[in-house]
Amino acid sequence: MKLIYIVEDHDVIRNGVVQYLSISGYEAVGQRNLEEAKAAFSERVPDLLIQDVMLPDGDGFSFVKELKQQFPRLPVIFLTARTEESDRILGFELGADDYISKPFSPKELVLRIQALFRRLDDADGGKENVSSFRDGDNMMVIDDNEHVLSINSTPIALTAAEWRIVFYLASNSPNLITRAQILEECFDYSFESYERVVDTHIKNIRAKLKPGSWIDTVRGYGYRFSGRKA
Image 1 (spheres, helix red, strand yellow):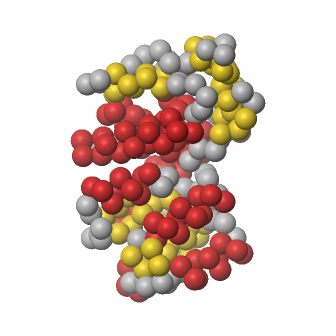
Image 2: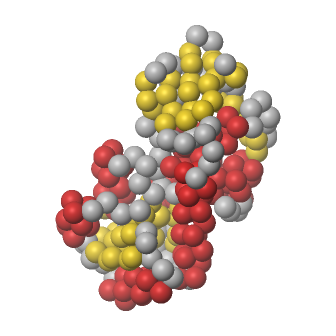
């Protein structure tokens, strides 16, 4: 049974989500604030964190940023009343896997959680898949079984969403991939307003995949993995 933490200060929302997730077959535990969440993480790391942004004792964005330094592959869904595009972009820049605005449908939340776990489970259950690519003098090795990516033998820490994007681009190299394709294949949704989210992830990925360029932008279309099979 997968463990999910719900950090939300509104009692009705938190208890409702916990109850709905429990009925759906998850072990759901709610925390009212960041202090309780930190205490819970010290005892056990969940399979998924559902994180409110505005809390009485701090900022959910800052909390997730700290968590990602220790648990870079922790799946995170932001659940918040802050609906501005800049907030959504910031959430994804911090490594979130999804961003759900209040008010929301509990059924939709469960469907998105199921989709997220399905992607992660499918990746973990795949056959042995280790690929090597070159970009000039630089060598990238992608181990899809262990979810390990290294450049010149140095491991690169990627979030779950970043990993899916890199693996998808590399698996389809040298084809051009649209933003819509990345959204559909890596995030299970294709809303046009979310296409900037792809650009944000690509920017973060490029900052990590050094040395080498690895990902080309095709203006007016999308992206292409530039590494060549080794």
